[in-house]
Image 1: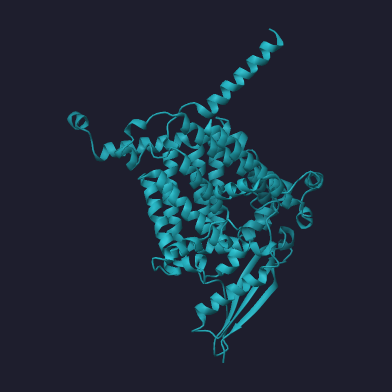
Image 2: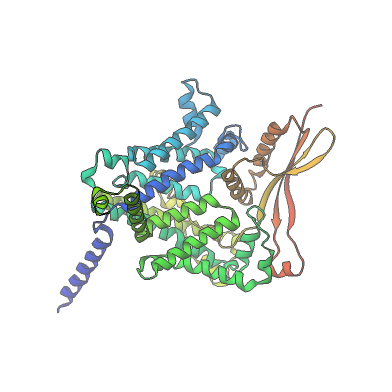
Length: 326
Length: 184
């Protein structure tokens, strides 16, 4: 075999593998799960902050809008754009913040049930952009992850299953499609980069190697949920937990894309986020990360959930054949 | 083709942003926290690292802001920072004093405020302005019951595990303080 043929064969194989990785047709159930979960997350997030809405997002809130706007880029979205737009209709500033929150909740419900899916995704994304701009002082990791997920929701084919859209209009669009695989890969790769960079950054310091990071994270006054002083007396435990975090974050790309290690890595990541929720009180952040991980890599579990749902449906509403057999 | 164009552009921005976010580790204060090989790596990388403004054209910067791909992902890295905190010393007409945290009524409100306090670490110049803003709002909320509100912003220095075993406990250091009083 000549060198030219060898190179051509290698390129052809590589091309075929890349093509298979990105464009092999698959079903949209992961994305539909993501749509429902993110829609509900948006609703629960907005309801979760509703009692403090004006203090966090209002112009006269904890951080005055003049100060927040000092910190924003010129082109960064902010609630004042919305407030000024609805002011012509006689809506006051506090009412406009509540109006925006209600639009966000309605869009979240719309996204979850898959009614005008893409439009609802655009509306959720717009509301989130405005809220995150004005509330930038109070925004954190979860907002960034929710933001890019909503951005992907606009592009992804999410309304094919378990949606009002599929019942009303799109019956024919069900089935495998390359775009599902392609956008699922986008989500997977984004998570891979996020976790790897998180792990890499941690690996540069000392604290994650010697266990101090776990100790500090568990005892930081603003996150402290329980008396965690006992960790100091078992430093080996803190050190092993630190290594565990480094291993699963730095190894995330490898473990998640390898079929055999994927379930263990997914279980480890989910456990880590449950730990963050319980011991640091970051419930919403943890819930969002679990949703994203399951949507991106939890295909067998989503299928199992669907099968369970179908058997429950059959149990509750048996078909005529089942009744006849009984 | 459209998908490929989006994919290449989008991930190029994410990767460049993530690489450039490593510049935060090249600050003098952060460099001290790095382990030895990492410190050498960062020192050498400093020579080659351009600023984000030089690499990402303005139009793509806007795109990355709207697509939420303009962030690095260094949560709690390289180390877990000390705990910044904000609390309020409130005093009523009878000179009774109470120390309170921000009056929040929701789990997510608390989650947001708790994670935001680390902002004070990196923004020394805006810290007084933000602390004043907090004070004004708290005073507005509590002025019917209290005559004075003092905003105290500071940092908890946490002991290491070894120090903790030796009996050392966290210490609070005040950084910024403002008093708001009802006019007589």
